[in-house]
Image 1 (cartoon, rainbow, N blue to C red):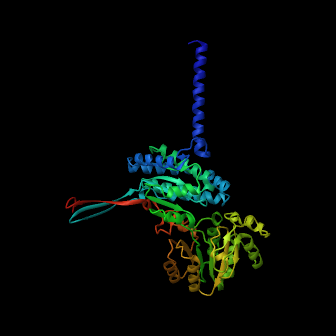
Image 2: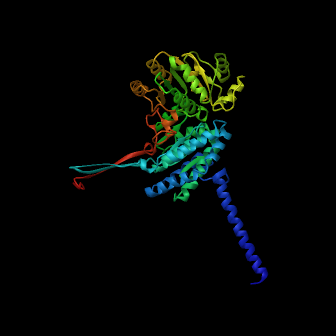
Image 3: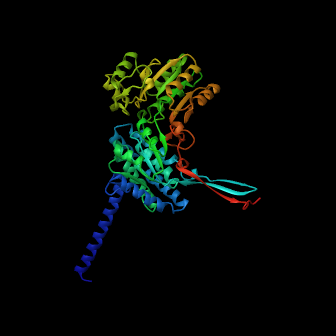
Length: 478
């Protein structure tokens, strides 16, 4: 071989190596920073639905072990992306805290159940054997919120894939980039583990009109919605099965038997988590009067700032756009949703150390702070005479959402009474509400708490339907 020919061959090899390296970087880049050609992101809804239907047909042929391998791969991939997703979410939406979002992304990645949630049921007897197994719906239509964008995509995605489904997603328009990056990451991880095609599909430009069309799309049998009252109503009006996770106004009761230091820490931790934008976060405190001052002192030691009455009324004028009367839901200034408390208080002319996590505002029972899900680290606190009065008022201020409630007490009778009578999907005893999501508590997690439609904490089994097969007069072995 001549020197010229050898040089040409080496150049060709070098060029091939460079091309391979560039392609690998592009693939990594699109999977980690929203680069070119993301997997599963489509220019319009019709294209997304067609792709989801094609991927379901292929995915329906793979064994259960492949489903679990896909989920394992998704978990491994996402474990390297918590900070990326969290920083992008805060940058894009302007809501919450990066460090808290990292905790939430880790929670849903690690504690969303996979195929182990799909245990079959069998019956045997004199007349043979019957088997009931959980089958997929097929393509599921999903609407996700601005408050927990990547967390909901991860949680819903793992659960629905475990159930054998594929997904068409319409993310909140204000969380498009982080939601679609999450979709891309999950699809790339699934492909590595043997998924024949992308399993989660989204639109490049989500809008209200796209969401409405998706919920009514012909041939999609199940809608899953996580969001506010308007989108829940839209899903329930679509004349098909809907699993809907709507708003909450979770009360926390503290009675005279509680461990006040622990209660104070738990209330500050839970009520300030991601600046109170999680639907399960404590939204108001109802405390027995004799220990109210001690509880406030404990909360101050745990990182809260306690506001004076005149400061509370100044803050009220700043954070509300319009009030609608005593014990009525007020219209909030949305620019303060999910902001750090020092940022909000600065707007009200109230000095605040940036290390503080929340502001505690003692108010009367009619105050709109109590009756409005503000989704800000502003914690209204009201006094009542007895533990029974506290339970009664907490149930009233929860306003029938049947979402989440909590109580700090050593009185088993009172704890049992509130647990029974609040009738919520999640009830937490002596801990932060986040523990009810599996964050410091036992059990799986979910970021779709389906109180309006009744499923409660959704997992893989929520997104399946039972199919039953009976073998008559045979195959009983005893």
